[in-house]
Image 1 (cartoon, rainbow, N blue to C red):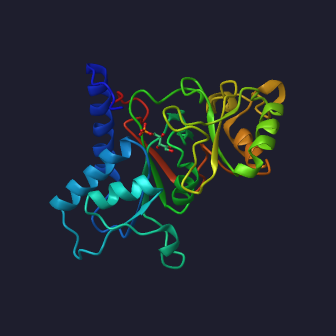
Image 2: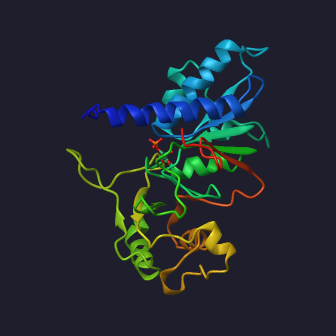
Length: 267
Ligand code: 5RP
């Protein structure tokens, strides 16, 4: 069913587009060889901005820029814009991507993100981790002091054969209400990812903020209180988990959130 158009929707779409154009203006240029393209509704504006940039500033060679998708939809968006897609595994040797643009479901003050609302988190992380720079395009609704403030749960991609045991272990580590993501409309059964895996949405108590961690609060999971790094590592340890939708401490990467830099008014 198409989304109802309301003034609020218009404002949100305008904010997404503005953040995307700002991100591309600041972090993309026509000489870039490999660029990652994430998934979701915001990145569509990112691709629109890249296309506009390339029209204004054509590269020296029309086969200069290659775009690495993070799923089927992302690939479609790249192709529909007339850009050149290249599969992750077709990247030459140890080539790195100059930059990866992606959206997020929630972002904290150190730019740790929750991702996976669109069920693409495994490929998104794969591509982000092969990029010199990860640029998260997020509008004013998404920045919070602590993750899990408004976005209710952490998406986790799991092997179908192990989903029940993953759910059991998640309950033990503090997510009694974790559940398999199901189709909501005419189609029934669990949603499948591009890897034919399942998604579990795991609510936890609000995570510690980067400031809480600096203040020395214990985020090791005792009393159900986790910091982002510890929880991501703990979930990743569960047998059957392919990837967790916490993008945290992208160490060695220059992580930016367009539209969210400190002191700036949200776009
Ligand atoms: C998909 C994602 C998306 O980037 C995230 O859900 C944000 O989507 P949108 O731009 O539609 O708000 O992680 O798995």
